[in-house]
Amino acid sequence: MGGGYVYLTAVMDWYSRKVLSWRLSNSLDASFCVEALKEALERHGSPEIFNTDQGSQFTGSEFTDELNKHGVRISMDGKGRALDNRMIERLWRSVKYDDVYVRAYETMPDVYQGLARFFGKYNDRRHQGIGMTPEEKYEQGKAKNAA
Image: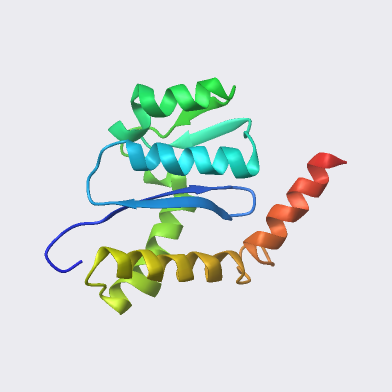
């Protein structure tokens, strides 16, 4: 962003690749990551396992306490192992090359509005690797788990 940085975090369901929640911040403190986590847990329930990288936002007590409070097992990628979290890494590539670099946002509200549009389209667009939209795949997984 012109003259500054914006940090993005997202909670993604690995089975469906659906983005369950996301947040932006102009600082790297943990609060925006915890907000995204809380929203995902409130709207979609608690997963069995939650995977993150080893960034301080995800290893600190504010984030891990929230997962522990919901009985979620914590999994973290190995140091220098970007492929451990390939689903979210692929999302970051799509965000950058399909939206952020193309649009060259100038303000934080512009970034927020643009990413809201992007994630809406992302969840409702057919993905080659899963053969349907992430939204459809997510609903399919919920139906299987309910049966």
